[in-house]
Every structure is written in C-alpha cells, then in structure tokens.
Image (tube, rainbow, N blue to C red; front, top):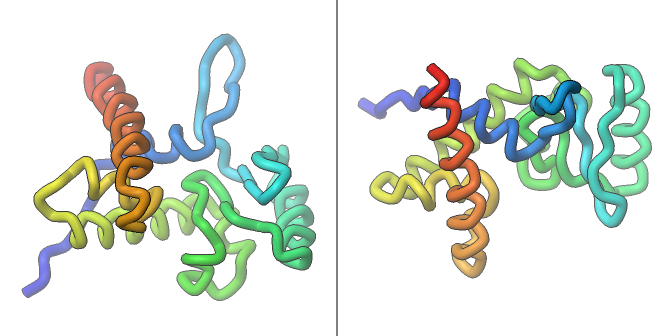
Length: 149
C-alpha cells in the first residue's frame, strides 16, 4: 500500500511565501493569490481574479507564461494537472497542485529533505545547488513559522 503524503500546512505556506510574497502593509508580507511570472518581464501581482485572468490569457497567447498563482505553479511543466490555466488562479486548486508537486519530490528524494523541498523548485540534477539553496530559504521560513506556533 502506497503511503499518503500530507505536507505540513506550514511547509506549504513557507513555499507560498517563497514563491509569491508581496507586501501586506505595515511591514508585513503574505503570499499573493494571483501572482504571475513570465519571461522576460518577471513578476506581476494583479489585484483581482478578473485582472489576473485577463493577463493570464495574454501571457498564454504570447507563450511567455511560466508561473501561476500563490504557489507559482509552472504552467509549462504542470499545466496538465488542470483542465484550464485559469483554474490555477483559485488558491485552493493552486495549493493542491503545489502539494502534489511537493509530494512527488519527497517521493523522489525520501532520505534528503533538503533536496526534496528543493525539488519543488527544480528536479534537474544539473541544478542541484539551486535546489538546495532554494530549500535552505524555504526551511528558514518554515523554522521561523514553527517558532511562532
């Protein structure tokens, strides 16, 4: 029987902060539900779902979209997980897909949690140092959040 992967919600939140953080006012940060990233422009933070959906359509039409939503799901590699790209603008769907990606990475690297978390960012063996640096940042956020519990 296969084990069920249920990532710690604080770990998922840590990933979301790493991926889509934006100012939440008064010196605070929060993940952004409608964050979009494309090449070469970089990150964009639409204020509403409808604004994000409009930009998303443009990016997909121009084939410049890379990452969508609160968990910054890469559409090129993970768009097959949803029927339509705008579904990734729903934070619940986006987080579920992010959890699936993380669980697959944990299954791939079960004895190396740093590489498993880094695999959320990249599982390319040639980019292992990038994955470990990414994971180090996420783990730092996660430890900080655990101390607040």
